[in-house]
Amino acid sequence: EGDIRYRLLQTVWQYARKKLGESAEEEEELRRRHGHFFLGFSENAEAGLEGPQQQAWLDHLEADRDNLREAVRWSVESGEVEVCLRLAGTLWRFCYLKGHYDEGRGWLREALERSGDSQTPLRAKVLIGAGVLAFLQCEYGLAEGHLQDGLELYRDLGDERGAASALQVLGSIARERGDYEKAKAYHEESLEIWQKLGEERDAARSLNYLGFVAWLRAEHERVIELCTETLETFRHLGDTEGTVWALINLGSAALYRRAEQQAAELLTESLDISKRTGYMEGVGWSLNQLGVLSYRRGNHGQAAEMLRESLSAHRDLGDRWRMASVLEALAEVACAQGHLERSARLFGAAEALREAIGAPVPPCERPEYDRCVAVAGAGMDEEGFAAAWTLGRCTKLEETLSYAYDELPSEHPKPPAAPDVLSVREVEVLRLVSEGLTNPQVAKRLYLSPRTVSQHLRSIYRKLGVPSRAAAVRKANELGLI
Image 1 (spheres, rainbow, N blue to C red):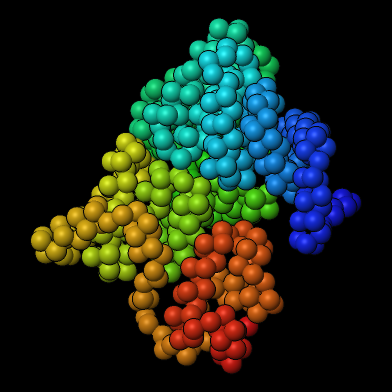
Image 2: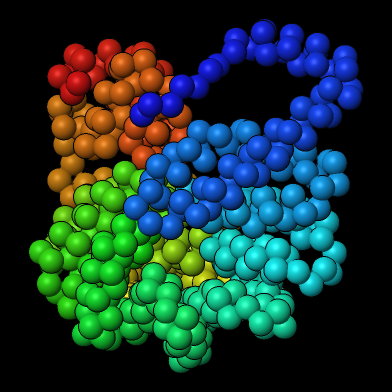
């Protein structure tokens, strides 16, 4: 892309670090200059993340992630509190868009701990970032505390823009907790401020959030009314995140009102954009809704595959609210395939997860949820159904996820030597493995996490009856799979 980047052999790098370390003053000065350089870089990038250059700046930031880590580390170790606040405050949105929630939260936490109770715009900005990332990992109480502190500080400072950004996220917390009237009130208040300030992009975001609330409440016509307008706005502004969410809102509204072809087109576009830009939240949500669409069309195998990939994406992000919904969707697929004990166990696990975070089943998902629970209950004896449900509730989350990743036998089992024994995704993974790519390289090429690639490989080994990558490639060649 016109950039030149240099790499050093590890031995050269180690030698250079050793020589530099022999002069403490020189190393200290170099780290200071490095830290300030990447502070300026991150602040330039922050402005670039809004608008048509967003993807280019995301790529630049991702390429220099190690340098950004080092800059944050220097700011903490050297006691440069203002630099630490500025770095964390400018980088949290990058961490959100690329799915680096844990790392972003760590940077923000360091900044807040070192800023004390300072009443500055920098600290308010960091509070909002910390609130956003905590919310995205469903730590609602902590998130609400950060956001309320940020809102109060912005109001004391007379910063309406900052106050509106806090109100938007407070509305999202209320939405996930099922308090839709409160969510609507927060989003409408933020919308009023953005419109008064003439901020077209942020006003469109508030409208998108209102559309999200309407979708969860099964008010599908209202979603179309709000998000058709926001989609045009975001496309015009070149805002990929906003475009993705408008497409997901509209696609989901189409899904739940049975306009299946329209839903497929909208959600496929949102998935394509999310994969191209590396927007992991968009990937997870798009796969979730496309999986539900496949389930409704009766394509149960395809539905389960998409839902498992969605579950993996949300697991990597730490989004337990979405994980609960995806587990319920997988339970519905299992129910449709006649695996009632599995269905009951997944429903029980999802119920425990929802209770842990305090997030109910949304109204738009409730009818199919209730129907499948009733079908599973009627198809099993009462004691067996209760035992499977309780087992799901009591199983640790990681064990539940591993159980959910296991593929069900199809309705029409095939002999193990059949050429189509592997799923489409597994063939894609194996083809890249045969080219010599490592798990992280395969993950990057297919927009998956390395953990998901490992899960696919374990499934491939089991299906082909082989112990290793090399053996899997040989067997797949013999069967004509790759």
